[in-house]
Image (cartoon, rainbow, N blue to C red):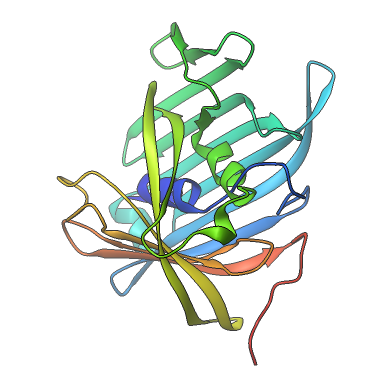
Length: 256
């Protein structure tokens, strides 16, 4: 379940093109409190750091998800997702995925070659390597979050319109489609915040009730910060609220 939360946060937390000034920078940090029904299930965090790959300065984003309290005894989760991506165009160079979800583990790393549209995936648990051909402008699960927040069309969308990107996850390329619903003021622990509401389209079945089972609220400002995520699951519901933030590049606007 914690894996789902982190994926939702990363996949649905918007980001967009780099032709305008970045909505984020080194030092940005988010912490989300996760609820499963009335139970405080755990937390998820996202942080932006500096790194160097092939003598080039890049962004290093780290996402973590973990269960707490009684939830940890029933279903222990400790997930780490990382991405290294270009500071100019957002192209990913490397990703890391280390997860432990109730005993299900994965230890994987991917190395992107943008010039050849390929990624070398190393699975350290299975001791395998695989090279996969990619589409143009593909993003990994974490870099998608930051790539979308800078997209030039985010503030131009009308109700019912969507943004679609190619995302590489689990050794596959998928179309991630995000539909814009409209504006809404919501109450948060920081005060009343004006938000843009989105519904990412998901596959129905074992996890989600229907295609529009997810709803995302992001700040209607230059940061495009996700402040709330709600998922109607096949069994119960999941909710994530922004609990802490620091290092934002732009003012966090709160209505009085």
